[in-house]
Image (cartoon, rainbow, N blue to C red; front, side):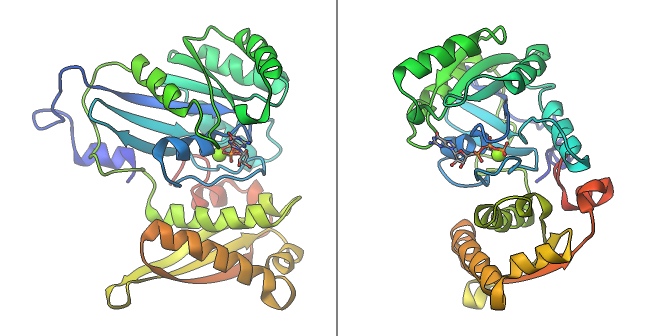
Amino acid sequence: MDLDAFFAEHPMGGTGPVMQEGFRSGFLTLVGRPNAGKSTLLNAIMGKKIAITSNTAQTTRHRFRAVLTREDCQLIIVDTPGLHKPQDVLGEELNTSALKALADVDVVAMLIDASKPVGTGDEWVARQVANAKAKKILVLSKSDKVDDAQLAAQRDAAWELADWDGMAVLSAQTGEGVQEFVEAAVSLMPEGPAWFPADMNTDQPIEVIVAEFIREKILRSFSDEVPHAIGVAVEEMSYHKKNDLHRIYAIIYVERDSQKGIIIGKGGSAIKRIGSEARVDLEQLLGSRVYLDLKVKVRKNWRRDATQIRRFGYGEGA
Ligand SMILES: Nc1nc2c(ncn2[C@@H]2O[C@H](COP(=O)(O)OP(=O)(O)OP(=O)(O)O)[C@@H](O)[C@H]2O)c(=O)[nH]1
Ligand SMILES: [Mg+2]
């Protein structure tokens, strides 16, 4: 559900959330360069896959909010598109979206890949973070990829980038340091009530998550330009109780005929593989059997068209 819609339906006031002594709540935004490991960390914190991940830069295209509710706190965790030098309108929209997520939050965690030397890209992101009013945590991610000496050097370089309120070293892959990071974030949160129902995990409509799961399989199957040129939209989705089956009809948009050929593959082999890989994940996500119908359409230069980008829900989110 969209947060604005949620607040409209649940106006704060007489019947608003009940304040519990010592309970903490607030927004935690994850920012960093593309590929730093933000979405993988979000999934590790949530203990399940809700955000898609891949080693292609600009995997995340939505400002994505997940809600973690515990006995003592509620964290609204905001995953953002990686901050980068924009090449097209899509890139600009993604940057704008990530930068907006720095405003009006309680804690910002900036992820820096421990295995990649701190560079001008990180310096630029850190300057944006430094301007935010929020408390700031420096996160050195992918700690499993480096030795102690590399880690120490990285820590020294990254610590200089801003005025940090805390630091965490973690691996979202092995889970090491993730819990400590969550505790550090909670300790920086103000006291406040739980704003969301305890069973609410994300603010994204299920159709958006389904489209993203399909897009992930394409990102992971192809290299070069194809992953950047695709957009996925779910056209229709329905649940059939009798067979415990979700029927999903989705369209993969590409920019050129040649890309359409690549996605379909010889005799339809590539799209068949994408479909069956996505189906496995979707069955787990939805807890039912899934029938998945995928079609490929060409929409010329959609990445230069702000209207089409918003129609996909990229950037600002659905
Ligand atoms: N070894 C290792 N790899 C990781 C870790 N965390 C993430 N990765 C890998 O790094 C790549 C990028 O991870 P994502 O979580 O998609 O990165 P992101 O910061 O969300 O990227 P964008 O959405 O493009 O900004 C993926 O291939 C992940 O599997 C980690 O702790 N250790
Ligand atoms: Mg991501």
